[in-house]
Length: 160
Image (tube, rainbow, N blue to C red):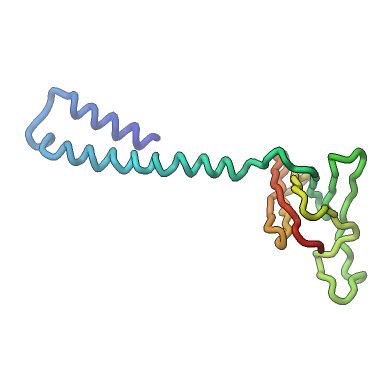
């Protein structure tokens, strides 16, 4: 915006100034065209892209289940806001309690459960530091930032 304003001001001041000479005005038209034309092209490219980015970030109101995930220092808290009083904390399992085939730092004592073939809205936030809530098999990864409520939606098509 600053560059466009400066170039527009200089162009207008040269065109309206009474202090002109043959050398200043010799190629003024072509310089004006190749300065303004790319700016117009960039504006026409940027506006639809910004609109699409906004629409992709919005979650529709057709979600049947809303879950709020709150990141804490060493655990996640889940609240099923559609059901009264249904909330729990999910802690990581200590390494010495892991069984064969379980993943270190990924296994928890209580897993979040969602129904299949249902639109689920996730509201994600944090209490202390930036966390990352992710389920790679669903294609979902959202950062939990203190003081901000991020949202995403997904549909679980398979069990597990």
